[in-house]
Amino acid sequence: MANKPNEASKLSGILAAAKAENRAALIGYLPGGFPTVDGGIRAINALIEGGCDVVEVGLPHSDPVLDGAVIQTADDIALRGGVRIKDVLRTVQEVATAHPEAAVLVMTYWNPVDRYGTARFAADLAAAGGAGCILPDLPVEESEEWRKAADEHGLDTVFVVAPSSKDPRLAEVTAAGSGFVYAAAVMGVTGTRNQVGSLAEDLVARTRATTDLPVCVGLGVSTAEQAAEVAGFADGVIVGSAFVKRILEAGDDEAAALDAVRALAGDLAAGVRRR
Image: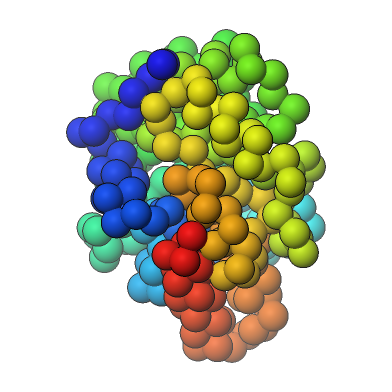
């Protein structure tokens, strides 16, 4: 078995606590700065208040190639609003301070981190109270500099695997990562779907054969029923686009948006407990 969980990390502790309760963890995602920086902080707080154990703060990118139309729309709103890396770090800090019981991650493409400075980003993320980083487009072979910086600051590094990943590749990826392994349930971009990809359960089983790290499934989950289904075979359920949609549907009514994402988080939290 490669790469056992780092029991000292906050993220690993939260995932272990969920496992001890015989349930999957609920992981929620929203882009930082969406719909505004302050509004985004309130929305991410609402995810935790509704029942998310872990939250991912997305760093908006002008070319989010792995994200579907919903998250692309949210990123565009955030970028047009002038969001910067410092705003995402402030989001992490305010959420982590308000909710010490949750783990706060940043999910980002590699280019902004590289431009900001690898060591600087790791130091600033840790100083903000972040628990780690999800880097979907950073090849493991090119990740040594980041992983060294992350380790120095106690940050977990989460890599993404897909149904197309062959078993030897899964072993390489899981050996390099920490915290958990992000298993993409489907081939393609993010977005809500009527059914969770049928390849997800097989991918989780193949990934578990290479590592003791928890395996969490994302891309496509949007209902309590889907959350319960995925929780039956995965250690965590990741939801993003469904939360973004609730905020977009609420328009300028922030109170309605916060109520909607808090309620959805509550439904999903109940779902992961029905595994």
